[in-house]
Length: 398
Image 1 (cartoon, rainbow, N blue to C red):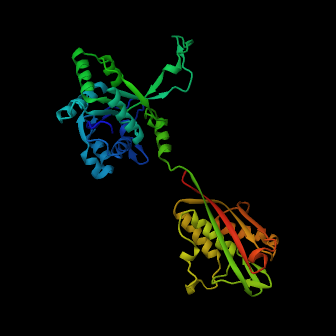
Image 2 (spheres, one colour; image 1 turned 120 degrees about the vertical axis):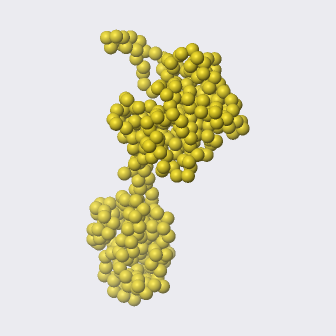
Image 3 (cartoon, rainbow, N blue to C red; image 1 turned 90 degrees about the horizontal axis):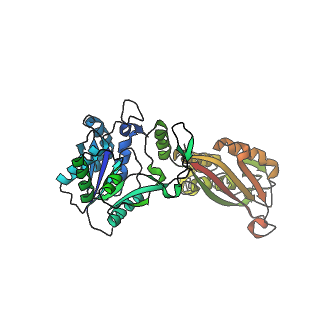
């Protein structure tokens, strides 16, 4: 920060939420299993910016507030509380007076925030503090994306304000503490109760109010659909990961090779501790790659006699289990066999079915391709077979 003034946050949580309705005020309605207020306070606590956080609550909400504070653990123990008044304006003033009694100096910056805006990011909080230090008071704003209309008493279009000069106002609104406290005291002395927010109140008493960029995630919970939106906001975001795998095995004496879980007659077999299936080994490594969980040799070391001659589909099934335990859903896999012989094409459908059964995929989500090396390299000299695989796995997103 460019200013060493103390920082405080005042959270207004004394309202009844009449527009949302229901027996529980909206700040105590649950989102993702926790009260809205818990999320709000958690976001304020996360960056460790504030020397004081004060919550203004309704006198009847002590138990609900304690329940909202409990999930925050030790971090929540530093949060102070005071009783609010009959209106939001009264509640803010009472909260400011409580901060003054606690010794908050006039030069401090205080952020006044709605309890029903649960998702204040660290970036927004930092912008708020810097803007208050620069202007003395500042509000987060968003541009108006839609055309605005003024309607007459009959509901007919009477005009269109210029949206280029209009902004949506959010909280937290940020102020030098002495200025906002003085403005609230003056409004009380004059009996003025017509202000809809603290920025308008301080501006009415001579304070210049700047602005800074708000955040679409700072929406206010006002209606039932806003609670659904908050649930979606907290839901894990979908993430697609890909993993790559490669394996190679040399030929030795034998009469068949294992490829893709299928035994293919051939004049030689592949050398390996298990059944030496390079396609399934490459695919196993590809799946492990999506979760950063090592490779097939780490989980099934060739020095372990348990895996001597073991079918490689066991390794593939284990990798699929590990992916599922970490919340992954296998979307598709694609494999390429590099070999001069045997021919893979005639066995492709059987490989697709077997791999699909192990991974829970339809055959069309299992790609099986083959190519030669044009007589080049160890594959071209028919010394062995190599395989490459890629796996696509989805995480999150419900």
